[in-house]
Length: 441
Image 1 (cartoon, rainbow, N blue to C red):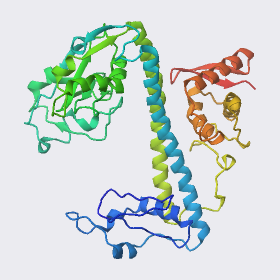
Image 2 (cartoon, one colour):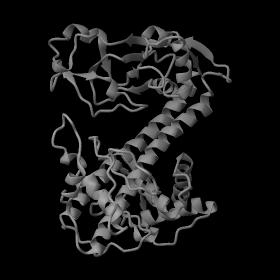
Image 3 (cartoon, rainbow, N blue to C red):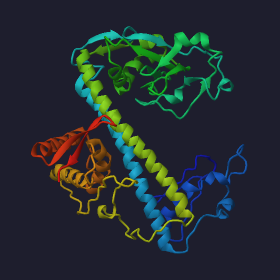
Image 4 (spheres, rainbow, N blue to C red):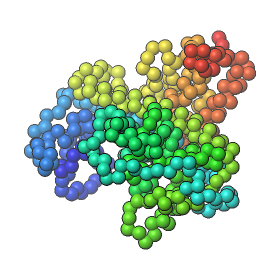
């Protein structure tokens, strides 16, 4: 009741609560989920009268008018529908997190622990690996009030994530005012930016290709690797490992400061595997990042869908009659389809198979179903994969691991078998410059 973050929870266990928390006890138990989605759409912070002293009273909550359908079945159907989409969003977020973990485990498998260096790689100082190594050219001269709505991009601390450049906090400066620093401090796409706020907040990402030129701000170090010594993907993988934080933490011993300096970074000894092995890891990173980009696009679509469904549902503009009133959703109740005409759909109505031995069998069945539903339209394996990932989770136990690289290879091997047997044929799409497959009737 005293925060502005719009946090609403449904309690799963009995609990005592502290002050500043309002407990709403629905008259009907099934309305708990419905009310949760209401408050996700109509945020509690809208009740705050004075943001200088943000607070909400019990009286204000009691008088808060919300969309409410007298028909209990409609309330439950709305909660059921939104729960489905929310579940898909959670799964997609987990898939993205799992891909990040996959890169970490692949790095350690290929190169070993950088602290123990059990593979005996040659070590070099971090500063010797870089062609360019720069920090903030502005110092304390650049204030928030100096930012413009256009100009040259300024990369700030909030833009640096683990592996990922976060593009939601944009700031620009006037090129004319800072023309002198551009030549020396310009970041280009592919450069590595390190957040240096100290363990455990050290993290690194690459400047994306859609940002042609930029300048890094305070607490962000620009690193441009020497390509004949170290691959950018290898360096990023190393910088984002917890083991690297251990190396960096040694530099903070006995210090009260909360950031690591360029000089300290330059003195960290880095194991350098052979460049061909680094390039092999870079190829894996490229494949994983391509898949992750598709997952993120799908996540954006799901979040947009969730917002649109919420708005229409609470306005009474949805036909809810086809939503089942089952307490537990079953896989056969869910049909995954892309929201445009002509694309193949993935519909599996069989009972879920729970045995680990059936994992490959399920993948094969999903692929064949998707292929037969393409209606003679050319597709690729990557067209199939995002839908297969969602449907696979519906068919397996909750503890079953999500689809990974090994599963992708299984489907690829099946595709090769089908090509060899003449069940599918390859065609070249000149417009999109890619090879596609089509079922042979």
